[in-house]
Image (cartoon, rainbow, N blue to C red; front, side, top):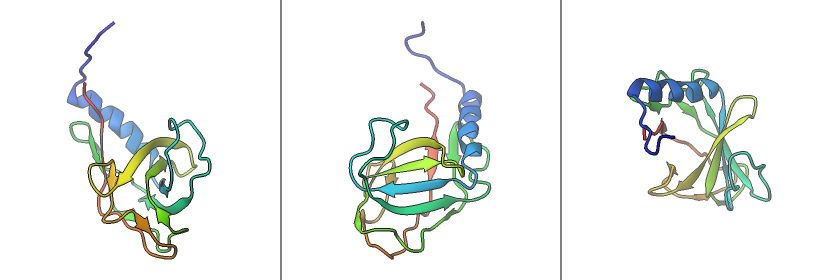
Length: 134
């Protein structure tokens, strides 16, 4: 068994495109609390703060394993007040694809502030997903 597999840019892009294509009209749901053990674990007591929606064509083709999202529709009125800690990215049919961390720096998704207010707009200006090659 390989101890240090490395895939080509073409393979990384094909894998990334599989994820990207599944997210057309999908969602990014932002929650409080501790993220579940893994993306297969149901959401528990965490509070849903906001839901952002991917474009009908969520991502153009990947380049070197990197997906760059098309415009993401803001949530014009956050569901609750709380501190954003993680997000679940899912298909339009609510099939979970991944969980990511949320913060103000150094996280998977970074916002200007993680203090969300009920009724306030929540928006995201850019999102990239990178398929690891090693």
